[in-house]
Image (tube, rainbow, N blue to C red; front, side, top):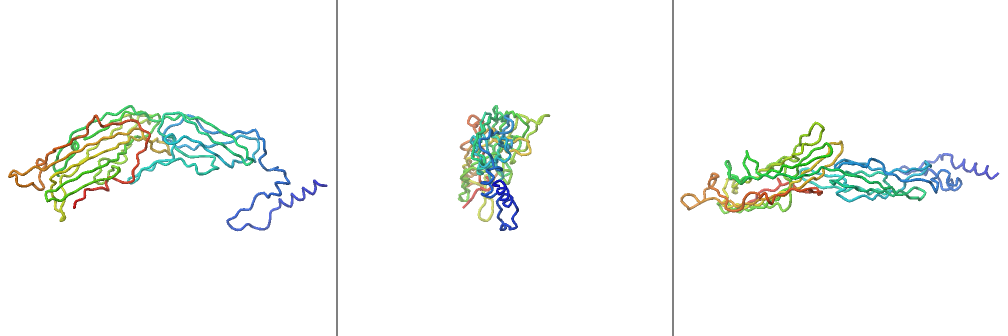
Length: 374
């Protein structure tokens, strides 16, 4: 008799209601009364023999995209994951992405904001190392299990770099002062690297400039970037950004001699308030560069990683000679009327390049800074 009454009550509770939920709300799939009467017949049972498992291979490659998921093994299909607590290594082992364009460069952290996510997305970072990822999974019955998995990351190997430096030249037309000449590389990195997987190498260079100039009419000019800016192919840029993809061998693996050359130059004249060209009497200038060698796998979805970073710098002071009469300076003169009186080209012994796991960051373009007079 009691069984028949329970079956009738359950049958009424299971009949679809003719009422509708307000728009934007969802009707509950189960009521509290049904759960009590059915004694959790449709719920996740307690005391299950289950485990949490991290899926996927253990050998991975830097720069590549990864979607790491966690699964559970259990005999009851009614069990669902209600919370996942991920524990991952910090950057640079994993990272969420890298934004880089003409005005901005920054690395993004892995997004762990969803407390119930059974999958997280990230990229493998610039390390040759073994790391561990864990995920603590909680089911809707309150039980928890922890899954642990080890991974081995392989990244490109930096074996060193050859550095070539030319001297400073005062050139026509202009006149301008240039590191190197139009036919000779002023500064050159030639890196020796190997990559475990197909991909492309390219360079990102940040520059910092500071200088003052006094024109023959007494006007003072100055430039001071105040911070590092991207060196790009816009206007007075020294090289193309990003550098073109380097050729690969028959297996798609990058050839191991990516190079970057640079010929920084500057005018030795300014303009007065009427736009008339005016030669500079003295010009003092400092140039600092940070040069990153980057790698990006050729997979459909990958992100750039740093391989090595170089630093180099130079400075000079240039003076306009007196005219033959010794009474005045020669406005708009040829290069032969200028001389370098201090400073010089980069010292190869102080120019370096070494492995690094730090991404270049910038929020401005070096082309946005010009000499200002007044």
